Length: 502
Ligand code: TRP
Image 1 (cartoon, helix red, strand yellow):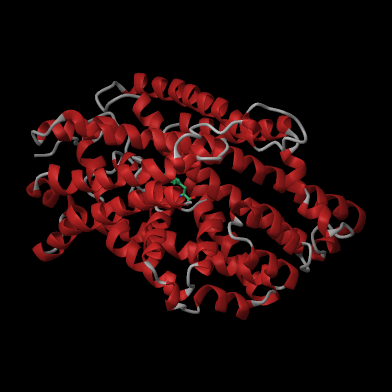
Image 2 (cartoon, helix red, strand yellow):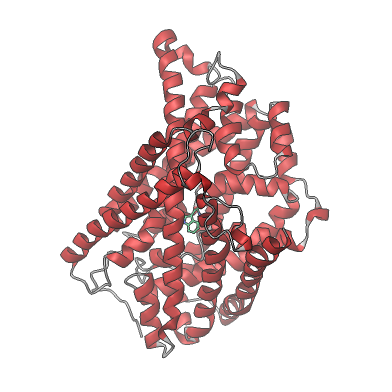
């Protein structure tokens, strides 16, 4: 019994390749470029990578398959899909709580993701001005120069702090990025999301490969390979495993009703299993390659490598402070520095599109809304929801302004301070923790349970078309038991135990 079928006015992906590119675009983001390389190097190198790969294989891929399956079978939007499936399977409507919380998670994430993307825009401008200025003065030979030639290390490390003390500028850049996201989403699935991924993802991959080659050739390749891949099995503890699950969920964009939403645009013909494998493989490959693009140039400088090794949570500092300082020390640094931030921008934009699409897809209505009306609702929905995320993002931007510069209210506010998990966190950090440490694992766990238990075996079989029953049984066991238990532990550990112990 096909529930959502052809003949509905819901727009579909134009084909398998377009769908895969869009899903890869959503998965590949700042999580791959910044978070993975650092976590891997810091949590046991090759030993962590081994655990991470197993996590992707046994938890990430099955849950990804589950999200695409629920989305396609239910159709409409994440909420409509789950509520329709719950009804046809004779289950309680209460299941809709998980797509609702997933949409909330995606929406909250995009409200600060856009502010961070605004910082990327700032660095693009700074690098472009640097190259442009010298190009005018010296001609093409300017391209061979290190970035910011003639400036001191402190000045370059100070670019981000200086930006943070200019709230107006941060907000304008955030507005520009959000406007681009809204514009693309308002054009719909084919000429918006798909077109954007079709243009940006190929450029992203070319830039990534070019930068990695440059980095391996000119930087300290051996030291980077050692840092990333030397297995240190003594670091393989329970918490490493949980870190791997958390990273896998963030990187594959799971547990946020997002892949579920992309699944609602899937045609009957597209094979979900193989598509999921490709998406997961591409996302993991980018994470591994990003480490090879990043660390050789950072380790080329003893000062920078000491900084990175000594910092417990370099996160964004790695991208916005260490990386510009590294390009300052490399020949061709200005050129490759610019390329690096353009690449990061494309990764961030295709992820932000996906994050906001999750709620826009709800706003444009179910699949039986007539196409013209749906298109109009989509434009209005994208503008209103993007506008709301923009307003919340102003709070995130203001929370980053140093108190010595100005009192912005947000830089002196710890919302949810009473809860141990959020203690002492500013607005941005608290929203990030709420979305990625609480909502995502919770929603991911329920998503797996819904796919494993609420959807009948016959429906799942019909949707997934596994070649044989034992592979199907393996998938079902993973979403029924393994994923909910593993992700539930991540939730328990990350949201309750660690904050209480701290
Ligand atoms: N996966 C993206 C990254 O690696 C970010 C992202 C996009 C995301 N959509 C998501 C994270 C949904 C969590 C949930 O940066």
